[in-house]
Image (cartoon, rainbow, N blue to C red; front, top):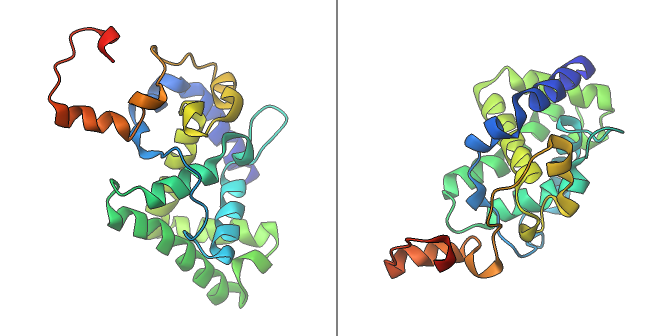
Length: 197
């Protein structure tokens, strides 16, 4: 697994921020903290540990705390504009992973050591639901690396610095940030110049 993580980091940096940007829908993050009432405490702890295993901090790269990945995922889970089935799949995956740990080691995921936890991740990666679920978690984590700090993610632009990413201009302002910007579509305003934003 350590070898896979090293290769994954090299891959991410190798493709550059541009390739990642093309595949990431930036509008999926809300601005307000939404940790309360989304996941039960045990599931939140499992999510935290999974994210740390998928994207561990190192001397040369930020971890999930620095990019605030958990906040972004919780925002995604409460966003009324996201498909509820997609949100449910993220939540169900946490439960299914914990059930897999129970079936394999007769105890919950959080009771396992790191080697056993990585074994569980490798096992579910071989299933269609596991591959899809882990891919979704990584996509949301990559978004956390690249979102504007306006969304309370990518704190201090740490993800941008790590990827050597230059954000697009103009940067979002609170009045034209997601989800407020979507109301502009309803206004049927034709924007002919950036100064109108």
